[in-house]
Structure formats: C-alpha cells, structure tokens
Image 1 (tube, rainbow, N blue to C red):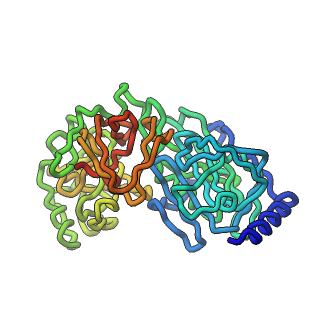
Image 2 (image 1 turned 180 degrees about the horizontal axis):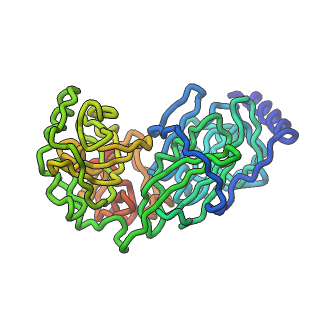
Image 3 (image 1 turned 60 degrees about the vertical axis):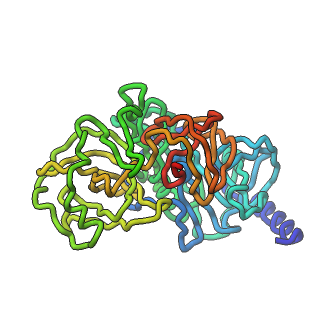
Length: 428
C-alpha cells in the first residue's frame, strides 16, 4: 500500500467514522443469572484456523484464546485517545499507540484473562501473524461497516458450576459478525477457573437474538485439580493412556476386537457382546487418535451406530477428544465417552493401540518444538505473561510437569511454562 493511498484511506475512514459510526460499549461485566436463553444453537464449532467463503478465518490458540480475522477494509474502527499495544497472548509490550481510525483485522478474546483485544490492519499493517500488535477492546468505541454482511452482536460469556451458579465474572463483548463463526470458535476453547475443572461449553441465543457462551466447570475435590500426576502414568514407548482411576485400572489392556476393524477397513464389524453399557467413574482428560478410529453413538461399535471415521493423521494434526465419561460393554470392554472439537459427543475406543494422552503426563528430559509456528514460554501456568517465543526445531530442557485442568504444562529449567501438547512438542 503506497503512503499516499494509506493517507487517503485513513482520512476517509476518519471522516466516515466521526459522523456515522455505531456506538457500543464493548467490554463489561454481566450477571450470568440475568442472561435470557431460549434455544441452544445448532451450529458446530470449527477446528482451529478455519477459513470461510466470506474471508473470515477463526480458531483457538493455546486452548483459551479465541480469535477471528476480518477481510481487509470490511469493518472500520475509531479509537478514543492513546492506548497500549499488547502481544497476541495478551502480554503488555510497554508501547503506546495513538490513532483515530483504522481497519479491523482481528478480534482476540483471552478467556483466562477475561479480556478482548483487536488488531488494526491499517495502523499495524503486517502480514506476519506472530508480529501483530493488539489494543485492548476497551480502547475502541465504534464500528463502521463497509460490507453489508456485518452487523454488531452483543456476546455474553458466562462461567458457571454444574448447578448453574456463577463462579467467576462474566464478560460482555460487542463485535462485528455475519454468522456464528466466533461462537463456533468459543465452543472449541477450554478456559480455566481456579479450583475447578473444565466440563463443557454451550451456545444459547437470547430473546434479542444475541448469543451467550456458557462454560461449565466441576469443582475440584482437592487441591490436586482434575487428577494428581502420580495417578496418571504414560508408556514412554507408545505414549499410551494409563488408567484414570482405580475403577478403570487395567481396562485398557483388554482386547478391543472391533477396533481392529477400525484400523484396517470400514466394514463395520460389530461387537456381538456389547448389547448394554455399564458406567464407571469419570476422570476427565484429553486424548488423541494415533490410528484410524470411529466415533459411535453407543458403546456398540457397529456400522449403524457409527457417526464418522477419523483417519490416521500426522502427529501435528491428530484428532483430539475430551473424555467426559467412561463405560464398559456387556463383555467388559472399556469405552471413552468423548466430546469432539466440534462439540459432538459419542464413544471411541479406549484401546491404547489407537488413542493416547494428548498431553505429557510424566516429565521428559528434553523436548523438540514441532509446531510449524513455534510455541511460546510464559511466566504463568495458565500460559499468560509471555516471556519468549521458540521456533520449530528448538530443543528445550524440562525440569517438571504440572497439571492444569485437563491439560498439563511443561516447566523449563528457567522456571517458565510451555505447552505439553504432543501435537506441538515431541519428547527427545
């Protein structure tokens, strides 16, 4: 973009926004109990980094930062006074910026910080996503739409326990949207609340047609969170899931004959001994598929009950599931009841030849960064307060692993935290 064109667009956008912009309070606290909910949305969440035909891209970073990008010059913004620039993870850059208007490039909602940020693609024109700078959404007072497909939605985000009681401040956020893309991304996130373990996410629509996301959490019964490290072990050779509680101990070593057909063909061979299920105790965790597996409506793994196949994928793209329950077939074979990244529920095999822990449970001496975009190190266990970035291929020494909700974090020798997600880092 030439300097002359940039100045012309900046002047035009300033003029338009001064006279025509729609005023909305962008961020605030709301009482979760006052939210009117009529119907659960029928849309499903996307996998991270999904691009739509309208040019929107949306997804989730580090499990708790939801983002959506906008096509260039589709939505203009105006600012009030000077503001501070922040990094993509919400850490302060200690850099002040002033500007009266620009083009909305991206919105990021940091659920663990309970804060939203915007990237202005005009004031901070960069195609390098890792170099983008963001302003807190409170510094923005208006949106101006240059594309008729966009309107302002008021989004409420609630944090409640399993009884529906608010356990943390809610947040409200007005944002430009032409569909349910931001809500879809929010369904994929797993925010944290101290003393609680994440359970589920749901979208509801109020009488004013504005959406609300409600995150439900289970109160921890002890300070150990969702499970202590000593109760979870991991085979270093196969990275297999260990038993999650005494009630399911040694169950994963049993033969899962129907899943043998999952790995070799789609013939839908059934387990003739699985006419009913016996529930066992629940200990939530995250797993991924290491080989081809099926997702089923019930514990009976038959062709008629199959929802879909998940093909074998490279390590960095393995499909992930949140285990929300356990059940045994009549023959005693263990199944995982899971929630997919799109919010769908069903049953998958618990056979360790086919699924493994998404996150390291024991401490590797060293890891290699395998994520194409690299990873960040943080001061805090909830992966906030960024310290530095590590590129793909970097080898890091690890001194400990720490449980955090249904995930774990790796602690570097310098005391900072990084992800323990096996699709992002690999034990050496």
